[in-house]
Amino acid sequence: MKAGFSIFKSTAFSLLLIVLVCATVLVWAWQRTPLLTAFLPPNSLLQLSPEDKDNQPVLTVGRNGTAETSTGLVEAEVKHDQKMETNLKTDVQIMEFAPPERSENTSSTTGKEQYNENVNDQGCNYAKGKWVLDNSRPLYSGFHCNQWLSHMWACRLMQRKDFAYEKLRWQPKNCQMEEFEVSKFLERMRDKTLAFVGDSLGRQQFQSLMCMITGGKGSHDVIDVGKEYGLVMPHGGTRPNGWAYRFSSTNTTVLYYWSTCLCDLEPINTTNPETDYAMHLDRPPGFLRQFLHKLDILVLNTGHHWNRGKLKANRWVMYVGGMPNTNRRLAMIGDAKNFTIHSIVNWVNSQLPKHPHLKAFYRSISPRHFVNGDWNTGGSCDNTTPMSIGKEVLQDESSDYSAGNAVKGTGVKLLDITALSQLRDEGHISHYRTTAAKGVHDCLHWCLPGVPDTWNEILFAHISATSVINS
Image (cartoon, rainbow, N blue to C red; front, side, top):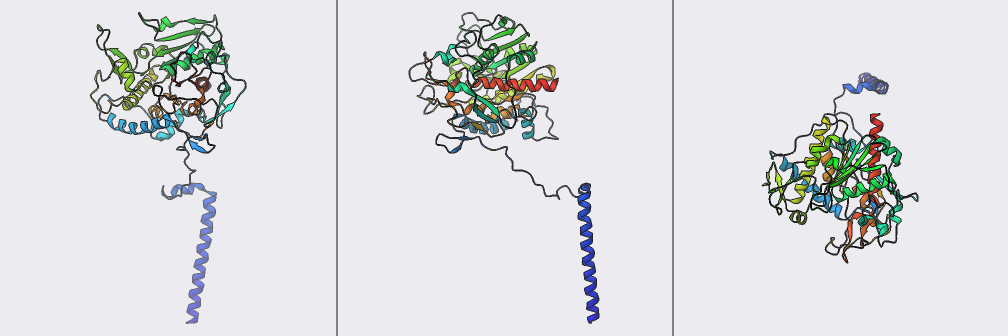
């Protein structure tokens, strides 16, 4: 009995020893030959990944010194846009006049990856970073840029006495943004045309760029070529639908076309001066259909004119598919705006193969900073201290949900300026405009020089990165 037990014990020990030796050999072979993992089932490996940082909020330092996420109208609008965007997607799927489907390769990248590729140039997200003091600023004089800068936006010509807001520069996180230089800009735009198409914030960006290129001084090198683009004073009008100027030294054209809703407007009854206007939500402005082939850089924007008051005052009537809109969901202003943004981005994207020289951008919405009311209900923006509500943007995705989602999967890039501009509540016209009614603040438009200069610096960085890639 003892002998049998001893034999069993010896055999068990031998088996255990063999198992240990085999396990050691397998571990050694695994380390030496990683390809052995190919023989395992695809889900058998434990996958460890870093924490997803794509959904981090914008973290800023509040007035009370504590960390807080960005607040104000933009945050409320973004949340509202997210809800409307979800409804809009469902609604568009059942609408025969929905924008054409985009051609996007979904086999190798997710929607989020595609969006990040769209935002970044060679790995740099220019929208993520911080504001820093720079005594070499501003890039031009607010006193002397009279030829290009409207007096209503030149805060140096107003009652404002503090100009610290002119001394800030945007510094992207973990990458360098090429410094704007006039000679480099003109050379990279040689024989090319850059067009801003949008509302008054687009006009501010246009005027900012004209001041940046000229240094705020008049020049005989600049020629008015508005007639080439139909940008002339209409009969009985107070201003043309836009402006176009050419720098003869490099044959570089910079223009702006006024299109507040970014969709086609057409008089319903051409014989009636008081007629309503068809607001074609699914049709790009006629200017783009006519002149797109002449453009090399296109920057689109819309947003702040989408409200009931503007539609009523302008006598705009929503049309889709060439007919008055009957869809209840699109009757909602926010949904109509989002639908139009998607429509115009899709249309431009469909035109890119026909115009391979064209680089198109959609600029995200510029934030408003009204406090305790709106422009006509006592709202104000009295802060004059730079970076008092924060100086850094940490999030990876745009605060303008609608814009970010519209460009996803397209060849149209996002010029993302929302979060970085949200931190600059001290840079608005405020109450300093001498012709403004008493108590009325402009917390929508910006002092120039000012924040829109940074939008153009980021645009220049995108253009420069594209030039490097194509060279």
